[in-house]
Image (cartoon, rainbow, N blue to C red):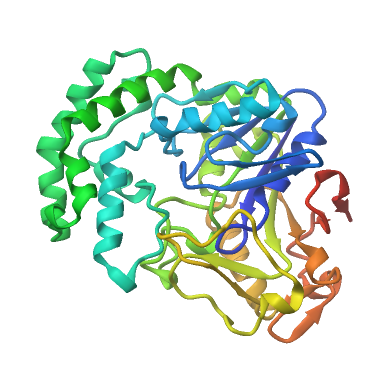
Amino acid sequence: MSVRIIIGKNFGDEGKGLAADFFAMNSQGTAICVRHNGGAQAGHTVDRPDRRFVFSQLSSASFRGVDTYWADSFMPDLFKLADETDSFRSMNTFVPAIFASEKCRCTYIGDVLINMILETSRGDKRHGSCGMGINEAAVRSDSFPLYLGDISGNSAEKLYHRLRAIQKEYLPLRLENLAVDSGKYGEYGDMLWSEDVLYNAAEAMCRNAEYVQIMPQSFISRFDNIIFEGAQGLMLDELNLEYAPHLTSSRTGLYEPARILREIYGEDARIPHTEAVYVTRSYVTRHGAGKLPHEGLLDPENFGITDRTNVTNEWQGSLRFAPHGDAGEFTAQVCRDISETGLPADISLFVTHLNKSGGKLITKNGMADIEKYIDHELFGGKVYTSSSMFSEDVKVK
């Protein structure tokens, strides 16, 4: 039995979808892919020669027929789920099963609308949120949680009354705390207080909950291979205060997988062989507001860099680019992540988009050979390199 934990090393968009697809392709025996942080804001791209898909709530191992598990730290958006499953089925004729903890905290339409109103109110000082309501769901859950187990198997009428209570009792307090007048934001404000919108959301959420089978977290131990697919990147971890407030409302590194594994297996000695795989492009990207070290030192046009997934949008603006820092900067966040959990694991590096850089890392000091640049005492596992969009072309050293 083996465990692989896929972690974005930077600000997200590193190639975690490719990594999940690669490890699913090479799994021997049964496999499960665990989504353990974030929610529907993820956009993990997997390319096949004849197909391309951007995964949000399904795992990026889905092309390989690998089922998805939502851990209790994942925040699903049931309203949006059908769009993704229907789209995936239209090109594949099947959708792998989705299993989930009953303790998943769900987002709902009110979280999304407050997110949109708040970001709009900030004008040119937006935080760069995806507008998917993840932070709002996390904040609301402290006092008015909406667990997946409370929705699964229940009627739309019952869920509607629960959402209506949130609308009446929670929303006024939250808007007052934010010092935001929803009446100033047109359609967003109207939808926030609409009972019809709320009932339609309840119907869709209950209908889409039928895609999901509630199972305890120990369920994942039944599989020969466990792939943890992280979302966002280490630099966006909610406790990385150096980059506050432009962070995500989740733990983006080893923290949640380590917690889940210890919950299931107990002592570290009982945890199956684990490999922590830190994924990075040959350069660094950031989609959204906030500090990006060494921004301006990389002109994407000089390297022919384009991105079909991270397109310019109202909430995050345009994708931004930068080179890596020096060797110390390259490993600093990884060292912190490893030391925080103390999880016994081989540490590996997965470098993508090397076709844009001639097989080298783009750093603030120029082009660098991967083998000479990285700390081999830290990355003592393997180095995976990708110079194409396809898992079949990944090389392992």
